Amino acid sequence: MKILNKKLFIATMFTSLLLLGMGCKKQLDINYSPNNPDYDLGNPRIVLPTAILATISKVGGDLSILGGIWSEYFTESTVASQYRNYAQYNVKSPDLNAVYTRMFADGLKNYQYVISKSAEEGDWNYYLMATVMKAYTTEVLVDLYDEIPYSEALQGQANLYPKFDDGHTIYVSLLDSIDVALSKDFNASTNTDPGNADLIFGGDMSQWIAFANTLKLKMYLRMINKYPEDAEKGIKDLYNSGATFLTTNAAVTNFTDQDSKRNPMYEQNIQQLNTPDNLRASTTFVSWLKANGDPRIVSFFGKEDITSVNQGDDNSNSEGASTAAVFVEKFDDPVVFISAAESYFMQAEANLRYNVGTPAKETYDEGVMAAFNDLGLDATSFIASGGRYEFPSGGSMDDKMEAIITQKWASCAYGCHGIEAFFEKNRTDFPKTSPVYSTNPNYIPGQIVVSASTVLPPGQLPKRLQFPYVVIQSNPNAPALVPITTPVWWSK
Image (cartoon, rainbow, N blue to C red):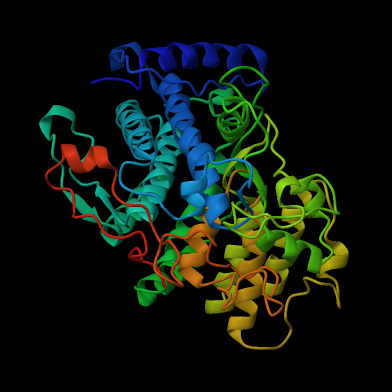
């Protein structure tokens, strides 16, 4: 069996040594090459960071850009064309192959190695970390493609053509695997302290337990539309077990301003393209921030008084379009898997639906505060009585749900997390889809619009990615291609 590849293996060994010798001064290398060393050269302490780097290279890179465009935080510049196909929804099977192949072969394969090896050694710390990250990475792939190889996957030469499993079946298996990991003895003498080899929590296993529970909550909420009884039971069981949830970001941080050690979105979009101009402020997001007097506009776009581009209007000659504000990116931006804000918003939704845990208003308020705190801001006045983001005291359940998910959407602009907002739009239909384009006087700020340059039938938005061309060509069990407008299994 093989580890990810030789260059990354060497880089990760170097990373591990630096992590051990330099405390929290993490050096992250997200480069890859096709050379693969044998697994017997590695161990969980080296392979786990390797796998995490594979996940963040795509979730924090390609998917952050795609998700940010499809969630309408930013759009393609009128003076560039790098991501024009994203803005047009013109993403086809040959596109984004590396998202699938790297997260699958370089991420999932290495997580499975750590799971198997740590089980042999009774090292339940590494077992839990690898199980949670494998579940997270698998879930992202399922949410993108609806079906992926799972039950027969990761067998190498033993099965070159694994079958594709449906998303719900995979979710159930992932949830079971997390439960197994959580049931292990974390006081066993065979456990080792991962320390700074843990790129996310620095070896704090209580945070990993909270991450595991929060991931379970997210997956049960995703099941609500199609398996409501299973979702309700799962969430109630989770709360009845006394589960803890994230109160801090599950994220990779401490990127450095060196080649291939920067935040992957920054590395891909700014460093490699040698320009900061590709991603410009979308009127969808900017109009909402301005309408609410939200100070996060400065954090995301550099200043308060800015112009923006209507979503997908990449050939616009309108005043200010060519000088619209650029989405602010920094080399040391974090890559967030689940944020504290997201955790609180999920808890608010769970309470709203099932009357479990802390009252929805309290966790909603905590979510807004956490989202502002990520940017060094204070949301106290916004959530106070009469504030712009006060939780609805009356109104319907839909009104309250819209408030929760809209704030989650806004929070996901931070931390290379736009793909999560895209998923949540498809699950909940929030933010609402506007019946008019953003140039129309009747447009409501913050509502999602159909891109001006769309190649899809009128009124339609993307719901998924098509299976990668490399998979279609190599695996005869791959399902037939479907349009990107076809909802995945959990969509509303």
